[in-house]
Image 1 (tube, rainbow, N blue to C red):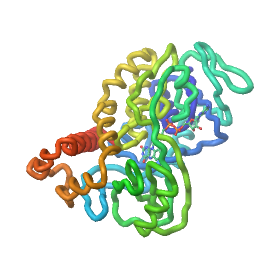
Image 2 (cartoon, helix red, strand yellow):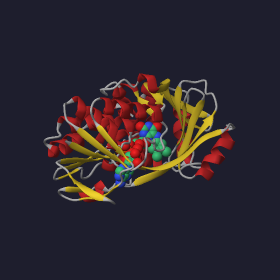
Image 3 (cartoon, rainbow, N blue to C red):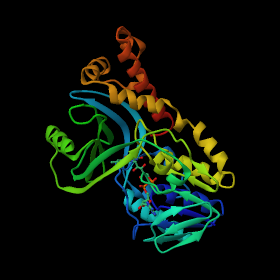
Image 4 (cartoon, helix red, strand yellow):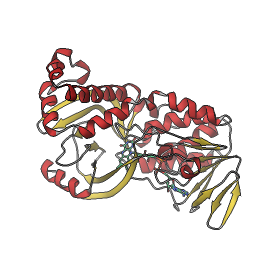
Length: 349
Ligand SMILES: Cc1cc2nc3c(=O)[nH]c(=O)nc-3n(C[C@H](O)[C@H](O)[C@H](O)COP(=O)(O)OP(=O)(O)OC[C@H]3O[C@@H](n4cnc5c(N)ncnc54)[C@H](O)[C@@H]3O)c2cc1C
C-alpha cells in the first residue's frame, strides 16, 4: 500500500500511474472535497497524452500558439496545448481512482510524519511508502528536507470571450516583475500575474478588459530546481518537490512526467531522485531564463521586441539579433530567455 498526502494534481496523477502498475493507493486530503488550487489551467497536449486517463473531455479550449507582447510589439511560437477545466478534470481523476480501487480520505489533514508514521490531529497511521504531494506549503517536504523559493501569483477568471486560440503573455514591469498571462476558456479567460491584485486591476484597465469576475485566486509557485526529493521511504512530487518549470512557472506537465518516473521507481526511490534531476525538465536553463526575465528592463525589452516584432521565434535569424552583441549584458539575457523558451516548447511547458 502506498500512502499519498494531498489530492491535488500531483497526488491524483501519481495515484493513477501507481494503480496502473498494480499498486494499492490511499490518499489523505485535508479538504472535504476535490478543490483546485489557483491555476491558469494551461497544459501542453503531449504531456497530457502520457496520462493513463482520458483528459480530452476536460479540455475547454485547444490552443495552437503562444504569443508574447510588449506594448504594441509581439512575437510568437506555434504549439499544441490546451486550457483545462481543472476542477472537473481533477474530480474525474478522483472518481477514476476510486473506481480502480484506490481510496481517498477527505477531511484528513496530515500534521507530520516520521520514519514510521503519518500523523493527524486525531491519530496516526503506519506507512510502508509515503508520497508527499501536499503542494507548495508541504509538511512532508520539511521531513524530507526540501527547500525552494516561490513566486506569488494572483488570478481572476473573467466572463469574456476570447476569439484567438492562443496563450498570451504580456511583459511590462509597470504591472509585473515577471509576466502577465491571459488564457482562453470557452466563455471566460484566466488573467493573472506574478504580483498583487492591485497590479492586475491596473493591467485590466490598460487592456480594456471588463466582465464579471467568476473566480479570484492566489497562490505560490515554487521556482527552484528540486534539491532533496527522497528520505527513507518518503518521496515528494509536484509543488512539494519544486518540480515545476521555473521559467514558464507551469507545474502540470512536470507533474505528469515526474509521476510516471515515480511510479516506475517506487521500489527504488533514490533512483527516482536521480532520474528527476537528470530529466530535461530540470535543465538549469529554465532557472537562467527566469532570472533573465526578472532582471530585464522595459528599455531592454523595447530593444529586443523592436528587432523581432511580428516574428515566429523559431524563424528568428542570427542577423536579426547580431546588433545586440554590442550590448553584451542584454545579449546574454536574450540568449537565456530564448534558450528557456525553446526548451519549454521542446519538452513541454
Ligand atoms: C496563479 C497560478 C497560476 C498557475 N498557472 C498554471 C498553469 O497555467 N499551468 C500549469 O501547468 N501550472 C500552473 N500553476 C502551477 C500549478 O497550479 C501547480 O504546479 C499545481 O497545482 C501543483 O499541484 P500539486 O498537486 O503539487 O499541489 P496543489 O495543487 O497545491 O495540491 C496540493 C493538495 O494537497 C492538499 N494538502 C495540502 N496540505 C495538506 C496536508 N497537510 N494534509 C492533507 N492534504 C494536504 C491540498 O488541499 C491540495 O488538495 C499555477 C500556479 C499559480 C499559483
